[in-house]
Structure formats: structure tokens, C-alpha cells
Length: 288
Length: 307
Image 1 (cartoon, chains in turn green, cyan):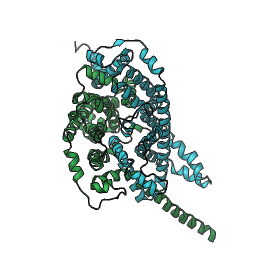
Image 2: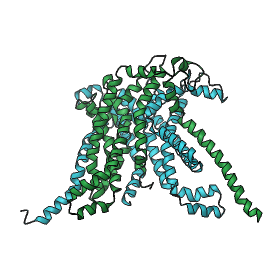
Image 3: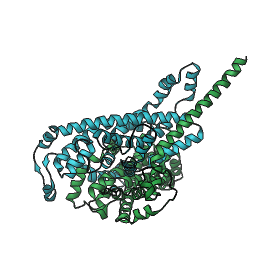
Image 4: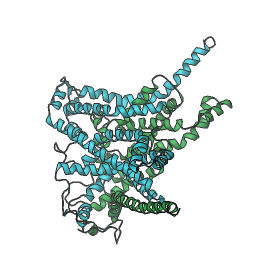
């Protein structure tokens, strides 16, 4: 009798002991994974003598904002922020508008060619940008669009548009059909039902898709660096990639401050929509 | 007219609605992607450099570009290197990502939240920013990596140059890519783990199955579709990677000894203004990626049909 009652107790305490070990491993992993992000921010606030010393300090004892001041006062910083905002906002707004109507068609209608269209959208998203730079550069050059923001906006549509179609389709499918039908029974036209019922319900999806497309466009590097040749026309990622320059004495503090500034809008937006969007590319495989 | 054939007109109108709705996207994609792809095929059969770019007309040379590319040992070296690189990166990402997802299940709630938050933070880091941080951490003079490795007595890494050999360069790129790709895999696999039927696991445990057996015969079959999709996506992404190898190795240090396919096209096609030959390489690369994408796209479309 006693051995029966002792057995579960022993196994429970053993499990608790094992959980301690797993938790320690989990914390160690957290430290390793987050370290680069921590190191970026920590360096950005350090005075130069702490950065260039042979023994690193983990957190500065005399934090300074000098590097941030230096980074934003570098030539073209504000130009590139403005360029990036124009490019990203226009390409995302255009994508969402065009993609929304197409997504409605995919979610609400069965029609010949529907499957081909879907294959095309997913297929385009899989194309490596490096394989597209040459034809896009040559075509843009032909129409005098290289080194223009318009050229970059058109190019960004090649990925923001299929992405928005695919993601919005998922959000529209997620709305119960009964709601829309109920509105139609009430005597509304299809369009009326659509506007009054569907649009408010799909609004969070529209926001999430826009934000995610915004992030992808903000992070884009290769197209922008190929198309934009003048420094004043660069986007922030291209500006950051030239930050190091060729001098022997690298200003790591300013580079890390600039990196932090470039990453902040992305990180904030990403944390807002990660849960809603993360599973778009694996939808169907992961339910719930 | 309308009164005599109201039904047919109405039905034609109704049938054309979805086509009108997708038309704008089709037109725009055709113009910004379809036309360049058509030009890509044409370019690959032409001599097309800076003079031709200015005159907007290339000279037709048949399959000479392809003959030149396929006869070049650099192309085959780059192809093999890119395949090996992709296999290594995908394997590391998938194994580590899945292991961390399995670890998440074992953690107590606060540590699980902490680790998940950390992973999402890493996920959110823009690639170009991550490259700058990597350059700083692995810098040979006072990079923190050399300091930590020396302090931990892994060896003497004082002023060790991580970018001295092509293998070491690509190992650093791998470290960066795997670090950045783990969160997506872990979070997705962890979501998939919640679908594994708990009764099945408990039944297997009561029957005396070892944890390894439970994983192989209960957990793995449920996860299989997710793992397949994640592996396909990782293969496609890692094969076409550009910003990380180009910026981490450095514009002035990328050459035939360390090219990956994306960097190869950028340098030999775009930077050297040899658009015709670059187009031939691009087309070969796009065809390879298209072939790699077939299983993924098929799976996505099949799932789309059974919502």
C-alpha cells in the first residue's frame, strides 16, 4: 500500500526537479538569442572609451545619447527616412486597395481560373529578389525610372501585392457566411451587405496586413540598393549599409545607434501584429 | 433589349463580377512582373551591357550566354556552394527550431513567456540591422565574440579574424541566418504541438512507451505537414539569400571564392553591367527556385481547397 502511494509522489518531485533543469536551459537560451539585440542597444548608449576598450562593459556606467545625436545628424539620414516613408506608404496603400477587391473575389466566388490565380500569387511570393534585379533594372531604365522613388514603389508592389491578396483572402474567409446572409435577408443588396457587415469585420485584418506589408517594405534592401543610385534617394536600409564606409576606425557607437533607430519602428509594429499574421504562410497546416 | 433577355444579361454580368474584381491585380502584376520576366528571357539571348542599356537595344546572340555560363567553372562552384550552404542552414534551422519548440512545452509558464518574447524580438529584427550588429560582435579588434570565447577558455581568440577564409565567412553568415530564422520555426512548431491529441500521448505513456517513442509515433506524425511546409519555405529562402552574405562578407570582399547564387548574380550581372549573361544566370536560378517551390505551392493550394 505504502509503495503505491509513494510512487506518484516520487515521480512528481522528480518531474519538478527536471522542470528546474529545463527552465535553466530555457533562460540560457533566452540570454543567447536576445544577446545581439541587447548588445546593439547597450553599445548605442556607451561612451567611446567603453566601446573601444579591450575589456567590454556589459551596461554602461555613464550612458550617453551622443551616438544617437551623431547618427541622426549624419548626411541624408532624414532624407532617407522621408524616402522610405513615401515608398512604403504608397506601395502598401496601393497594394491593400487593389488586393482587397481581388481577395473578396477569391473568398466569395468560385470561378474558372481561380486556382491558377492563387498558384500565381503564392508562386510570386517564392521568387528570390536576387533573380529579379536584372530584368527589373533593365525595364525601369528603359522607362527612365531608375533612381526614382516611383521605380522602387512599382517594384515593391511585386511582393506587397501578392502578399496582401493572400493574407486578406484568409481574413475574409474567417468571417462567418451567416452574418453576411442575414444582412441580405434583411433586404440589403449584396453590396450593401458587404459594406455594412464585411468591412467592419475585416478591418482588423486590413490593419494587420498593412502593417506587415509595411514591415517587409521597410526592411527591403536589394531592390532599393539596385534602383536608387543617388545618396539623397536612398532608403534607410541602404543608408545603414553604407554607414560603415571604408575608414579604418569604425564608429561602432554611431552605427549601433543608427541600427537601433532603424529597428525600432519595425519591432514596435511587429509586436503589434505578429499573432495575427505569423501563420499566413503556413495557413491550413496550423489551425487555432 | 434588356426586357427581352433579362436573365442572360444578368447572368453574364453576375459571372463577370469575380473577373472584374481580380482584373486590377492581374493587370498590375502583368506590367510590373510579367513584362520584366518576358524581358528577362529575351535578355538572356542577347549581348546587353551599358551601351545597349543606353540605346535600349541588345544584339541577338542565340544561346551564347548560356554556353558561357554553363561552361564556366565559377557557375558550377557557386551552385554547389549554394546547395551545401542551403542544406546546412535549413538543417540547423529546422532541428534547433523544433528542439526549442519541444523545450517550450517543458518550461514553467513564466520562463515560457520570457523565451517566447525573446524569440519574437529576434524575429522582428530587420536583416540589414542584424548584419550591422553581427559585424560589431564579430569584429576582430574588440568584438565581444572573441572576448567571450577567450574568457570561457574555448581557446585563444584574441584578435581572431572571422572573415579570413571563405569557409569562416560563410559560417558567420550561417550563424546569422539560423539565429534569425529559428523564431519563425519555433513559434510555428509550438503552435502545431498544441494540436497533438493529449489523450493519445497519455494512452501511449500508460502503455509504457518511452518519451522518444511517443515523439516518433504520436507527435511527429501530427507535426509532419507543418515541418514539411517550414522546410520548403526555408529551402526557398536560404537558396535565394542576398543581403546577409553580401553585407556581412562585405561589398569589397565578395568574390568567386565565397559567392552564393544571389551575390553571384548581383556582382557578375548587375555590378559588372553584363545584363545579358546575368539574365541567363537569373533565369537558371529562377527555374531552380520554381522547381523547389512546387511541393510548397501544391500543398498550400490543396489546403486552400479544404478549408
